[in-house]
Length: 406
Ligand SMILES: Cc1cc2nc3c(=O)[nH]c(=O)nc-3n(C[C@H](O)[C@H](O)[C@H](O)COP(=O)(O)OP(=O)(O)OC[C@H]3O[C@@H](n4cnc5c(N)ncnc54)[C@H](O)[C@@H]3O)c2cc1C
Image 1 (cartoon, rainbow, N blue to C red):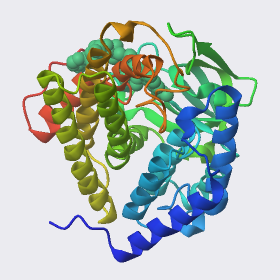
Image 2 (cartoon, rainbow, N blue to C red):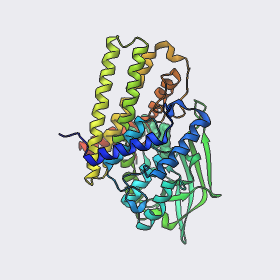
Image 3 (tube, helix red, strand yellow):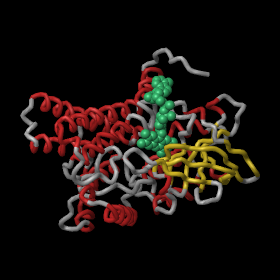
């Protein structure tokens, strides 16, 4: 097996390194060193630079604003950006680029691709994800938000919950029930809806940490154009599952890069605290190292499959389960390395600990505490670990299905 990248991809690596050298200050220590307004200003201006340089969605076709490169090229760009300690985009890009953009490439009409993809890249359209509802989480097919056709518009009524970055978004992609008489999975449609209208209200959910990164979104007669239905009417479940494949599978290539940076920081922490001599800690660190390597090669496998035209499938559940459970164990290890001092919150607090603290973050107890706590969320969003195990059991292994509540 050959893990070397093709020469043209290595040439691209040099190109992105030159871009980074030109654009970053000489004393740059990574986005993880910044806080407050300095942090948010940097993310916004850096995203603009990535957009101008054509580095945001390198694998999208050029006619929609991408660079027309391969998924492997995209991975190398992400690798270099992470190593340089800069973000890959803004918080809404996870939803707009990684999830919806790729889904539109697969399921969207030509006019939807031409309309939405360039605007997502420019930052004019900032998306969030409207899947979960108070009565529909793991059992997503129970979504009850209604959409009814009225001429050339849909009228939407209902509620979404846990909408990450909804307060920063101006568009939402959402699952709506369009045929209440059809079996659960067959009466759902996938709509794109502007949020800047009277029928949409966003209410932040304050977390125990005092911050609020997600929201409730209420729809009261909100309107979406009929042209903004993705896939066929009542066939939104297929589109929704396609998007989840991107949400779960795309992480395969990118996460090992940031987890490796995080593990290096953890090894430094073990050395600094003199825990690196403890045989049990050493054993757990070695296990973490092996797991990140497994993730890295699994990532190459997933990316190579994308390049060969294979679309994400139930196999994405293995990726999601593996990385989120890895991160639970590794952040627990961090807390064990810190010992009682981990109970005191000191040093720089992460601006976000979505998946891990930012590259370049110092080894503070505040950083590890927050990363430890948010690692728990990783086993919930994009489908809980129990649901991933059900998918693996039922779809990949063909085991008898779990009893379902009707
Ligand atoms: C940080 C964070 C960000 C999120 N962001 C978004 C977002 O942007 N947009 C969005 O739409 N949603 C988002 N979510 C919601 C997320 O998708 C749901 O929380 C998740 O799907 C679980 O649904 P639930 O919370 O309703 O839990 P439930 O479905 O009520 O599950 C409760 C428990 O029961 C278990 N369980 C349920 N069914 C089964 C079963 N059949 N077999 C075995 N165990 C089962 C679950 O594993 C879980 O442990 C986010 C969640 C978090 C934590």
